[in-house]
Length: 127
Image (spheres, rainbow, N blue to C red):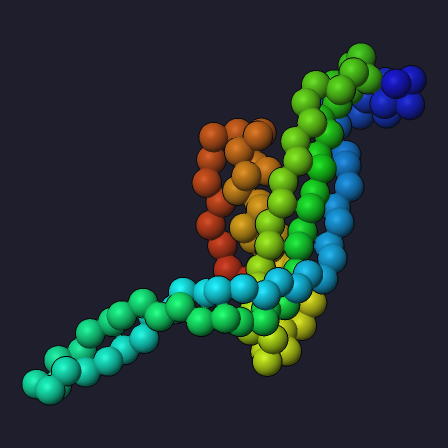
């Protein structure tokens, strides 16, 4: 606690945010519902749900955020999240793009703990 208090004094008693982020590969198999387009005898398009067994792989992002009062060094709040993204096993999705996708999902929840504002933006991975 003295470490956080000292850090708070150096920066005029701010809210200190620390924690951990775990990013791990993940695999899951099971039934998946997908929509399939079919056309009737009159050429009208219809969408029907179809269930199929799929092997999927992806990533899990599990952060823990700890909010500390810079004046006293006391933990004010701890928040845990879990975000997961899964792809068909045939897709070779890079870990970095999955990481950014999961962080984009997580960011509004994290900022919601600090203020009542929404975040909008665009990220360009390759140019």
